[in-house]
Structures are given as structure tokens and as C-alpha cells.
Image 1 (cartoon, rainbow, N blue to C red):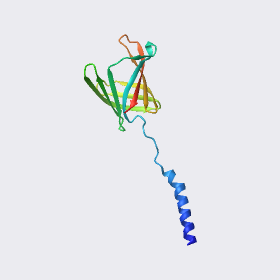
Image 2 (tube, rainbow, N blue to C red):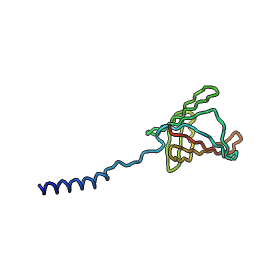
Image 3 (cartoon, one colour):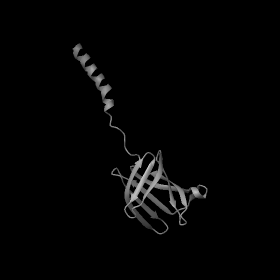
Image 4 (spheres, helix red, strand yellow):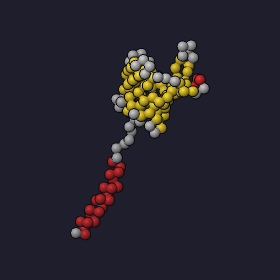
Length: 137
């Protein structure tokens, strides 16, 4: 009996030491899911908030597809755009089928807040920088 008890204790000790090492790697992309815009900041006008009646929801899927759904409350219009994305470090690059252009953003996730910073050229060809904050929904 004592021999069996020693064997059981030894087997349980070994299992407790080995099983935590079998934990699944947590390499899940933190962007996966939906994010709704909260505010947009235009760096070129002194970092001021940009007033908008537009609500944008970004949905990132595990198959590296992205859907952007924008609702314009003033007109009631809804715009949906689908494309793909890749991430490398803190860089997010999106490409959409409609225009074929790719855009690269810097991103930072803090808790349930996604911060995207990007650039675009205005009507005069001057590069402009903006930051948009999104809440996870």
C-alpha cells in the first residue's frame, strides 16, 4: 500500500510539473475583433479634436481580412469597405479592393483602446498626420 501511495504521489508531482508546460502559446493577434471610433485628432491643427458626425467600426478577422463600416449620422448613409491587412511590429498595413491602395499606420493597443496614427496627402499634396482612437466593442 505504501509503495502504491508513493507511486501515486510521484506521478501527481510529475504531472503537475509537466502539464503547465503544455499550455497553448498565446500568439493571438490583439487586433482581432471590432473597434468603434471615439475621436480623431488632426496633428496639423495643433493636435485638436476633429468634429465629425461619422462613426467608423473596424472589424479585423483572423484570416487577415478587415471590414470598415462608416455611418454618417447627418445623412444616414452607410459605407462599407472590405480588404486585407498585415501587421509587423507596431505597423498595420491595409489594402482595399475598391482602390487597390495600401495604407500603413502605426498602432498601439492600451487596454480596450486602439490608437491608429496615419498620414495622407491633402488636396494641395501636403502630407497630413492624424490619429484616431477606437474602443473595443
